[in-house]
Length: 359
Image 1 (cartoon, rainbow, N blue to C red):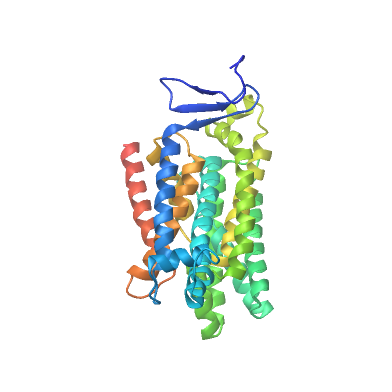
Image 2: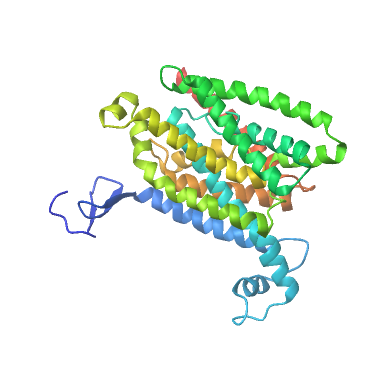
C-alpha cells in the first residue's frame, strides 16, 4: 500500500472490502456490512418513530415530529411534549443503546471464547447483577442509587470470580464457559432463596426487574447510563484488531505479537462493563447478547463477527422486542420475557444446526 495518497479510496474488484485512508492511517470497510448497517438503521428509525407515537394517549405523526423539533420550529401542546419527549423518547433511546451494548458484550465473549453459545447471561453475569440488586434491596432498603450500585458490583464480582476460578496455567476457553455456567446456576439458586425471604411487594418488584424490563427507563436513569454506554462503545474499536487476531487462534495471535491473556482480560472487562451498565437500569435482559452477534454474522456472510452489524442488530432486536412487549402482547410484559422467547427459538435452531454440522 505504499505510494498511496492519504484519503484515497482503494478497492479490489474481487474483494468486498473498501480501504479508506492513506498508508499510515486507513480503515477497511466491508461493503456488505455497510449496506446491512444502513438497512438496519432505517429499520431502527421506523421502529423508533412507532415507539414515540404508539401508546394509550392518541397522537398524530405531526404532533410527534413537532414535539421532537420543539419551539420555535413547531407549536407543541404541553401534553404531547410530555408524552413524546419525557415518557417515550427515553425508553426508545434506552432500547437502542442498551441493545447495542448487550450485542457488543456478546460479540466480545463469543470472539474471546470462540464459542457461539457464550454470552454474559449464559455465563452468569446477569444472575450476578440480580444477586447484587437483591442484596441491595435487603441491606440498603430500596434506595435506587444503592440498588444500581449493588447490581453493578454484583456483575463485576461475578466476572472476577469466574475469571479466577477458570484461570489455571492460562485462560482456557472451554474451562471459562463451564465455570461460568456453574457460577450462574449457583447464583440462580441463591436468588430464588433470597426472593422467598422477601416480603410480597418487594419480591414482585425484584422479580419484574430480574426478568429484564424497560419500565424503569426514565430520563433521569437513561441519559447518564446511555452516556456511559456510548463512551464504552467508543473504546470498542481500539480492540477490534485484537479481536480479529484472536479469531485466528491462540498460536497465530501470539505469533503476531498479541499478549493473549492480558488482552483477553481487558476485553472481558470491557464486556462486563457494557452489560453491567445496562443491567443497573433494565435488569438482566436475556439472549440479546447471545443472538445478535450470530445473526449479524449470518446476515453479512462473514467468517468472523462483524462489530458494526452486531451493534445494529442488537439495537433493532431489543427495540422490536420492547414494542412487542408493550403493544402486541395482550398483557404488558417485561421485555426480557419477549427476548427469552425469541432467544429460546434461536438457541434451539442453533443447537440443531451444530448437531447437523457435527454429523
